Length: 156
Image (cartoon, rainbow, N blue to C red; front, side, top):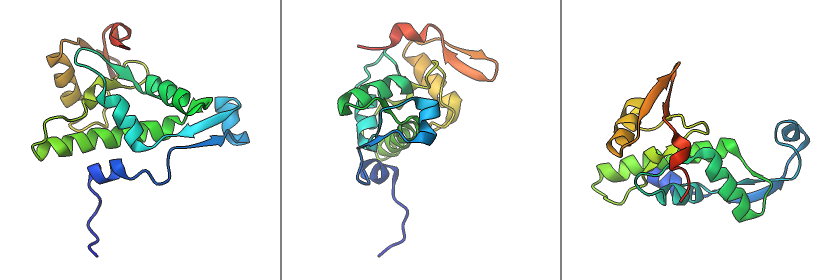
């Protein structure tokens, strides 16, 4: 057996027993309140990201709301959702490098406040270029880069 590291696309398909819904524990309830939390599967996060049409945007928070609703949970785990969006972005970039055309438009998925994600392939510069190509205006606010009036582009 080779000890070759998994590709991003393989990581995306490896759901490791997810999604699962769990009770929010005492430690987490201070931050998140009470109820249940869904830990989504990477593929679920990617599927939502994949559906964002050109000209539209989505935030990690919106993805979390959709996933919590889908699983009947109070909330969706912000940590795993962010990690899976990052995996989806790298898997898309990897697929594109292999010549695949229908890749997840990960650059349309923003951080919760309309902020660009420096952890995406190529960092802020690459995401900024892709978003500007689709007609969005990106401005710098302090150390962060955000889409002007990003709220206008959210949703269907």
